[in-house]
Image (cartoon, rainbow, N blue to C red):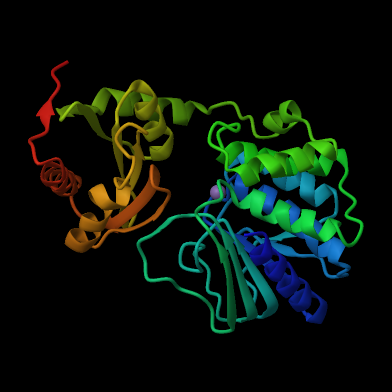
Length: 347
Ligand SMILES: [Mn+2]
């Protein structure tokens, strides 16, 4: 793993030193704290390598509200600039926290080099890269994209000074804390990266404050309506919950999981597709069982769903079908997976 990272660092340094044009960075739609913290770490890496070129972050697909403050910190520290257009050409595009250009919702065809740095396990789409040379640093072993970039910084720091101050270290730590649920599910590399950042002055409390947001009224309403609409089933000692909302589907899925649903499925009717947010408990999704093997693979072959994410937290989108139809399809896939009927829990 270490040797792998060393050779990626060398590769990245080589591309950056040879780059005469722009360096761009993109992430998945509604970029989250892990996206932005890895953007900050990457921009610091570019600077520490000795490049005069400042990365430009392509923000056309939006930034989540809990990542907005982080984005400002990096901008104010003069590490990168944020653009709201799609470039026509560039030397290098780094895709952070997304497994390919498709999931980053970006066309990668105009770049000489595309570098993917990611930790997502599931990708239910045929991988889409750019027209140029594609380099992939992607391993689901990692619990955040941020920790991968921090390791690159750490290795670089063994050869050349990397001047990380307290503010930047704290902003980088925020994304790592976010994806590991405040170190509840860290890889050993995440712990090592957190230690590295804290040795440079990062504070866990300050990092958490950077990504804290007050929940908006619309999100609260979506969550409450979603709970009122939820149907729950018992099957083989597990609880399966299904609901639907207009927006904030992942927030509701998380809430249902916290309530005790082993599998939470939340549908949301979007303009031209159905979006499905899923969570699976550690109790149900273990060993060989994950969201892909239980549901997503079949949903993809029967209704053409595309999906991505992790083994126990994922999103899928299907063509715009009636919600009831997709729901009964999901139930029948689950019944054949469990080999038993889903029995409704009565309120
Ligand atoms: Mn992530």
